[in-house]
Length: 151
Image 1 (tube, one colour):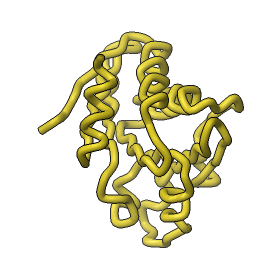
Image 2 (cartoon, rainbow, N blue to C red; image 1 turned 30 degrees about the vertical axis):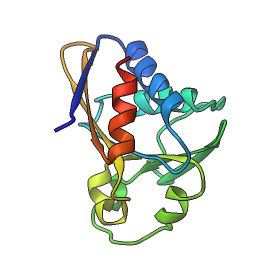
Image 3 (cartoon, rainbow, N blue to C red; image 1 turned 180 degrees about the horizontal axis):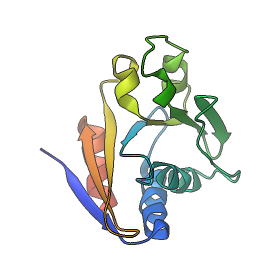
Image 4 (cartoon, rainbow, N blue to C red; image 1 turned 45 degrees about the vertical axis):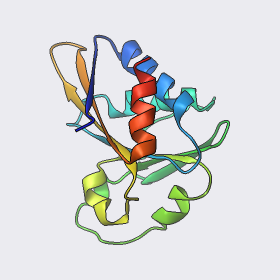
């Protein structure tokens, strides 16, 4: 497997990793984020948005499900947590194919709507502010992106 592991020790380091990833992503790329509550998914998403040129404050779209931002390209932040018991398609494909980058928190709840090729990221909370960021690329392009992230 092409799994890559990154350890961070502060929220700022976690954001810096995500910012660097944001520089590497291209239109229509989809990134999924899994991890327990408080693992750092929103912190990671903020860094990703910075890497994509988003200037507005990024926060979790828990109650709206989707928040969109404009950076160098559109950036969509989907929090699928509230869709656990639903199979409703709220137009996910439009977000995944509009020329922007989409990050999906709690992707297991909308698995059947996700594109086949994507970058799956798991964040595990350690002691204090330590995090393990596990990148699992699905597709050749995302394998290339994860290799570039480590250069």
